[in-house]
Amino acid sequence: MKGMAAGPPVPRILVSNRGEIAMRIIQACNELGMESVALYTDDDRAHCQHATVAIRLPSPAAYMDIAHIVGIATRGKCTAVAPGYGYLSESAAFAKALEDQKIIFAGPSSHVLDTLGDKRKAKEVARATNVPILPSVAVQNEADIQHFAMDVGFPIMIKAQDGGGGRGIRIVRSADEVAPLMQEALNESPGRLIFCEKAALEGYKHIEIQILGDRHGEVRHLFERECSLQRRFQKVIEFAPSSLSPERIAPLIASSIAMAKQVGYVGLGTFEFLVNARRSDGYYFMECNPRIQVEHTITEQIAGVDLVALLLKATTDYKFKLVDEPWPARPSGYSIQCRVNAEDPTTFEVAQGIITSHIMPGGAGIRVDTLLHSTKTHKVTDTFDSMIAKLVTTGQTYEQARQRAIYAVRHLQVDGIVTNQALLMGLLRSGMMRRPSMLDIRSLSIPGMLERLTSDGSVYLVQFRGAAQKRLGHDGKVAKPTPLALAADTSTLFRKGDGYTLTVAQDRKILKIERILKSNFPTHLSADVSLDGGKPQKMVLEKASGNAALERASADKNHVASPFNGILMEMVAEEGEEVEKGDVLAVFRQQKMELEVRAPRAGIIKRVASIKVGEQVGAGSLVCVMQDEAKPKL
View 1: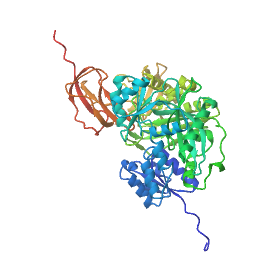
View 2 (view 1 turned 60 degrees about the horizontal axis):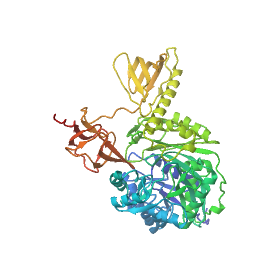
View 3 (view 1 turned 90 degrees about the vertical axis):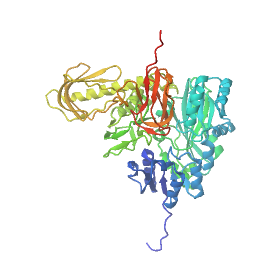
View 4 (view 1 turned 45 degrees about the horizontal axis):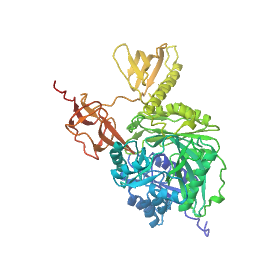
């Protein structure tokens, strides 16, 4: 209508991320009436579906290109940039470049990021606010580390000052481990800056406090999360609230708020602690993650809030005040998050391939955050993080949330690739998850524990699906084909004869195919089968997927191949060198992790493959050729 004043401009948010967190931010923008600008690369645009605008990046590396992202934000007249987690979310340089262009960084200021994004500087903030910290020191070389270890005793930890997401952390238990583990930590530090810290392991839980700060100096908390279940410092399952009493959590909350106020924190942040469950006064500040976390979902469930919406309002709306917001006084129920990764759960390498179809679970108390589109295939590569979904279950009690998590993982179906589904199932049904008070950060590092949990979960999933197949009846009619995805850590043995034998998991659960009716395996198989020697049943097996043996460079037993995809970080093997079984031959990087190829037996390195450091290799690529040790003459 003429003469009516125009309303305020609609905020436009550039989402400088991808995958499920980009989808989550775009959803919040839509609900708040904000425009969203998504970024994508070829073969990776599922998150763009509901964005206002989508802009193609020249390569995945562009997500880390500050000048390129700031240029897009400037040309697109964006009000703010929401970085999510990973990529540039903790980059002080990125925040400063946006500030210089008068564009809001949806998170802490560049000064705060420079302080809290550096683990050493963050500990100075803790010291200034009288928050307990473990003994630590900046180190330049191996001698510095050895000297520190002599002072405090082993075990110690070598950490990247600028590492994030569990990257750049190594536990050192003896003097002879210092040199190789120092090099590994340096390789995972962008600035090649490391420090040492006394290790607190036995009996310690990983507890984190969720805080939110506004532009008026107010900071509030949204309770705690427990993240003790980790493999190689990568979280697997998180739950909230923790297994500790409110009295044990109270000083952690007070410490977090004090540190946040000390630096003028704005936005979402997580302050992380090691807490000794066996001592009433035993806790230490570890670090601050100055961004939204992957596991923010479980806080949303128990607090009844939208953390992403709160983040956008707190950082982009100068009128927003926490004192005006309704705030939960206590957690409501319990929530558990399971990270579904496209990876082998025992070796952690990314399971590359095409997700041909998937079925996500649903029902009361079940939430799924995923990048997978319901009607499209999805390509998994080692270019991006391996997480494909987050299964979040909530209940009035912890046990109800755990049972719902078991149901959700059991009914998850992802065809075409291997996932960590069996490990998740093994964990959820384990004693450590039944009694979370017994958990500590060493729980998954016990030798053989991951393999045992994966095997247990694999057997359970196969038995569950085998029972489901019984509905196919005995009347000679075959029911509608039911997909059966073999759990990870399975082996398939095909032998000619009367049929085939399928050996599942380490304890040899056997699904015996008695008679082939129609075979186009693995796409389709119709057969009479018996599970563990039971009465033959009719069933249809479709779209089987599992952990097939990886092809080596050659069938020759002397050829040692990489069992995973990755980028070569170091070729340790040298021609003519004598090696023992288990010696490291090569080190590859895959996503955040360094993976080692070890000698399968004692022998001599006859030839080393011509792979250059920094070169990408595929699973099955030759690493070296071995020969047996020369036997001494008598």
